[in-house]
Length: 309
Image (cartoon, rainbow, N blue to C red; front, side, top):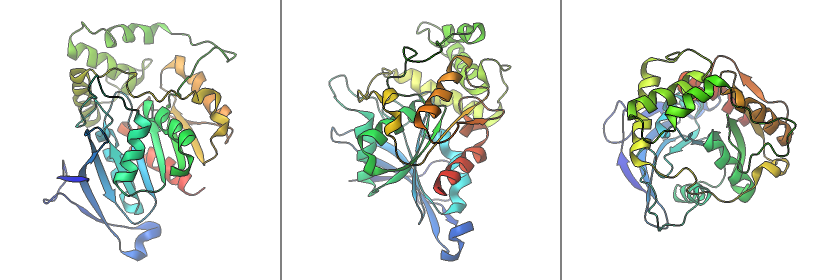
């Protein structure tokens, strides 16, 4: 049974906020309800989710490994007027969802399907950023009947390798200098967060602090929690070799990435788009790995584009 746990950072009491729809659904005078929910998994773990309940197509937002569902807050707000049914949730070990116990066997794909089932959702357009993109692709391959479309943003791909590409993954000096403190478990927490923010929020080739204000504060808050929990990065892997199966993805798919993202990863985003064979990838100007945090309307427009296909 899904538990309603109230609301967070919303402007109205009683666990909901109402938003009148405009645009294509304006004539229905639909009211969007924002709910904070806990969706139980088979092992008893409660997945924390936010749902902006509109009358339109369901869109599920899957966060990056250096984020949680709060990274989608501004994107969700940008899409409210479209009357969509918008869901974002915290994967295990992120935000308000606890990490899996060492004795627990699970996959993030199974969790995604359980969230859809628990919320009564048949098919959804899935938006995945970074590791969320890898999860979206795995789900499209394993459960194609549940996926109506994909928006991939700086997406990882399960099984990604340079063994079968005409290029190698080549670490540049600026990225290497930031990866060292970011991945050092013995480093000071705030020093790690500063390096992580420079890598993923600013972009390793951009000045530190390029993105400031509330997005940077939120990034730090999310990553303090991630580092505190310390869930293994490979936990929940479904074992899908999506890299060699991208041509099997048949739903409408848009592949995009920021031009300030990590230089070693840019050729792989281009190769992902090529293998998907649904048109060239979209380079997003002036953003790095987490465009939803710094330019949420840009990401909202990508979602609208896939919905029109």
